[in-house]
Image: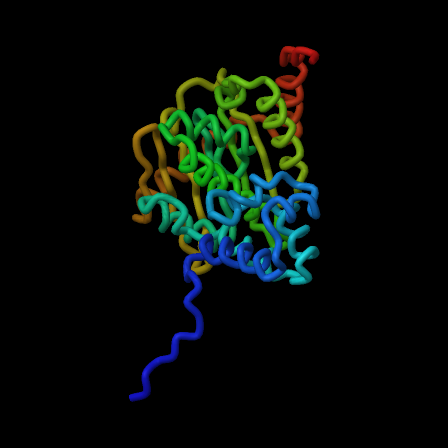
Length: 280
């Protein structure tokens, strides 16, 4: 049997492959990081972090690099693969992330914090830092979480219903500016045709999911699975009776929630009630 040829020694891990390609393209042109920064108008530290795999960067800088290097679509494609790679998540979340990526519709109830699909970078950073992440680990976890927003932004994005307890919107970030940006982001997302956002007022009292955040995923094969989460752990629920029990509780809460138009007005009031940022 002929020996299998090794075509390339490049990384098979999407994040590593993206970083390697960035380094290769720059070094082949004989550019230093400082030279590249001067040509592109970005800080050299940004490119250093991207080439070392510490950060993936955003779509704007990746598109600009594609144009600069004359590689139309190559770097954007590698970046998208890296952003969507489930191995960047902690192992206990990976199966859920794979299911989320293939879901044909999603429903979520947030009991105390916003779901990852709706979080801005600033919101995600503060939440993840509370879990103990620091430095490079924190940067990578923020990128992994906020990269999931692409699921709702693409042309064939699945329907997504977000049911938010009032407490979620009454619990601000420490940074007033970041909290304002998060509320503005919610208003923007709520206008997308595939997104339905509703607020569950505190006055409805106790209900079946009073201490449980849950995401329902309708899969290609017609099954619905649920993912429940609290401060300590998350659990993928696939047994039909348990999923049905959670879904009935969700439906009962949805019937008591503000409608989408009223919910937008609620978020607007939250913005209006915010203290002004100090002038510089």
